[in-house]
Length: 255
Image (cartoon, rainbow, N blue to C red; front, side, top):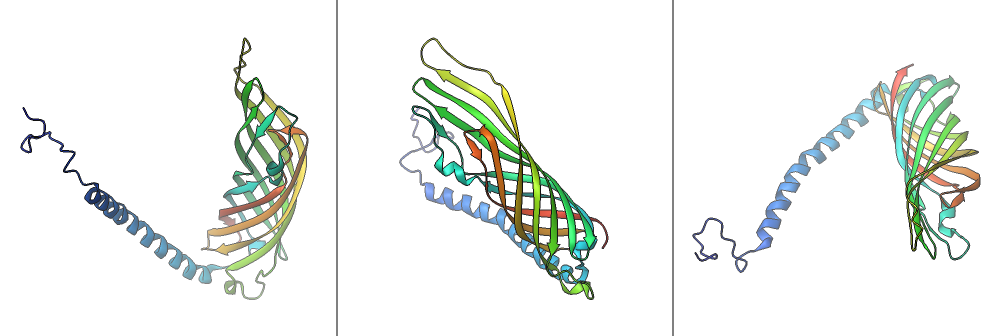
C-alpha cells in the first residue's frame, strides 16, 4: 500500500502540510479562552474601585491579616568574590513571600508582625576538582510599626488610598542545605547536610493600601532590608537590598 495515498486514513503527506492554519487556529483558541479572563478581571477591578469609595475606612483602627508575594534583591551578590580556584554562582534577585497580621493602634499608627521566606534556589560552587550545590533559604520574622499619612479621621469614606511609612526589625534565620557534589578522581561527595545561621536585621520603607471592600485591602509595599550574617550563607554574608511585594489583606474587625 502506498503510504502517501491521499485516501489512506492514516496518511500524512509532508509535502502538503501547512503549519500556518494550525497556528492560526491555536491562536484563536488561546485568545477565545483569554478574553473572558481579561473581561472578568476588568469588571472586578472596576467594581472594586467603585465599592471602595463606599466602604473605605481608617486602617490604623482595624485588625487584619494577609499575604504578600514579590521579590527581594541581595545587591552584594553582584560582586561575589571567592579565593581561587573556587567560583561561586548565585542569584541577585529571588522570590519572597510572607504572612502578616496587623493591629491598629489608632492615631494613624499600626503594629505589624510577619513571617517570611526568601527562597534563593541553588548556589553553585565550582573549583578545580568539581562542583557542589547548596540550596539557600532565608526566613525573616519581623515586627514593624506603620504610620498612615492620610488616614481619615472626620470623613473615613473619602480616602480609599492610604499611603504609609514603615520601619521594623527582623530576626533572620539563614538555612543552607548541600544537595549534590561531584568531584573527579576517587572522591565523590553526595548526600546532604544542613547548616543554620542567625542574625538580626532591620528595614524601612513605604507602601500604599487600597481598600477594596469592608473585608479586603490590596497593598503595594516597598522596603529596603539590611541583613548581614557573620559567616557566608550560600556564598554571601550581606543580603541587604530592596524588596517589592503585592499583598491582599482580610479585615478581621474595626470597619
